[in-house]
Length: 396
Ligand code: CAA
Image (tube, rainbow, N blue to C red; front, side):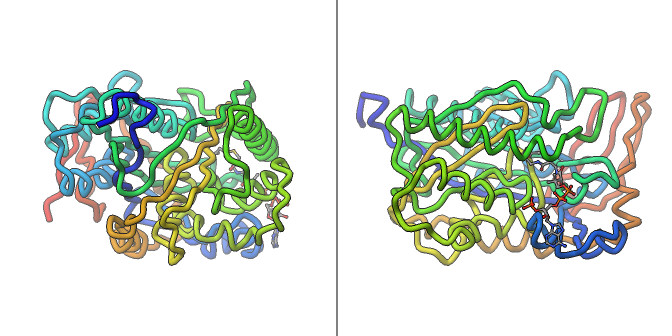
C-alpha cells in the first residue's frame, strides 16, 4: 500500500440511484400550460419529471439508493456518511441519520449533511476522497438526494424532478478513479435560492443560465492554471443538468473556452449518452451530475480506460471541474437493469393529481398524522408525530 496519499488511487467503487414512484410527462404538462411540446422536448430537453408520492421524500429515496450498495459491499469499512441536499427536512438533524437507521448500519460511523445548492454532493465527494486517501482501508458513503420544486405555472415548473444518487468511495475503485487537480470557482450571485420559509425555489432563469456558464469558464480556467488536462484528452464531460439542454450549451461554451484545436466533436453525440436518465427524471439538484455519470457508464459506449470531465454547479454559486478515468472492468459493476426499472416502473399521474401533490403540506402543529401507503420503494415516510418524522421499511 503506498504511504504517500497522492499515490493512492481513489474514486467511485459503486454508483446507483433511485427516484420516486410517480411521474408527470411533459406531454401532459404541455396540454395544460399551452406551451408547444417541442419547447419541452427540444428547447429544454425534458420528456418527463419524477414526482414524489405522499410517503416519499429525500430520506426514502436516499435509503432506496443506498440499500443495494450496502447489500453488495457490507458496511464494515464505512466510517463516514455524507448526505448532500438542498431539500433538507430538518434544520438540525442530518437526514443521513434516518438512512443510517433504516439500513441498520453500525454505530461507529460519522454522519453529516452538506449544503451548497446542487454542488453539495461534489463537496461531499471531494471530502470523501480526502478521507480515503488519508486511510485507504476505510470507505465513505456519499448520498445526494433532492426534490426540485418550483412554483406552479412558473417557467421553472417544467424543470422539476426528484432523485437520489448513492456512491461508495474507496481505494482502488471498480468504476471511476478520480484525479487532482480540480478547478474551483465561487461567485456571490442571486440566480437561484430558497429562503427557509419557502417550499419552492426562487430563480432568475436567464441569470441562472448565464451564471452557470460563467462558473464553467471560471472553473475550467482554474483547472488549467493548476496543470489540468487539455480538453482534447477528455472523452466527454458529465455536466450538472438542471435540464438536459443545458449540458449541450455548456459543452459548446467549454469547447470555445478551451480554444480546442481538435476538430469540433458533434456536441449531440458527445453529450447524448449523459442525458438519458435526467431527461425523464428531471432536475435532481445534488444528484443530477451523478445521474449523468450513471447514464454515461450504462450507455453502449465502451469507456474502459477513458478519461472524462465532470462539471458540478451549485447556484449562489460554487462550481468545480474535475476528471476521472474509467476502470478497465467497470462494466462488470454496473446496475443498468435496476436503473432502467426505477424509471420504467414509475406510475404516470395526470395533471390534477400532480397539482394536488405539489400543493399539499404536512401538518406543523405536532399532531399525529399518518400518510397513505403509495410508494413502490422499500422505505416510506409513515407519518409525523410530535414533530418527528416516522420512517419504516415498507411491507412487501
Ligand atoms: N421548439 C423548440 N424550441 C423551443 C420552442 C419550440 N417551439 N420554444 C422555445 N424553445 C426553446 C427556446 O429557444 C429556448 O432555447 P435556448 O435557450 O437555446 O434559446 C428554450 O426552448 C427555452 O425557452 P425559454 O427560454 O423561452 O423558456 P422559459 O422562459 O420558459 O425558461 C428556463 C427556461 C429559464 C430554463 C426555466 O425553465 C427556468 O427558470 N428553469 C429553472 C432554472 C434553471 O434550471 N437554471 C439553470 C441554471 S441554474 C442551475 O443549474 C442550478 C439548478 O439546478 C437550478
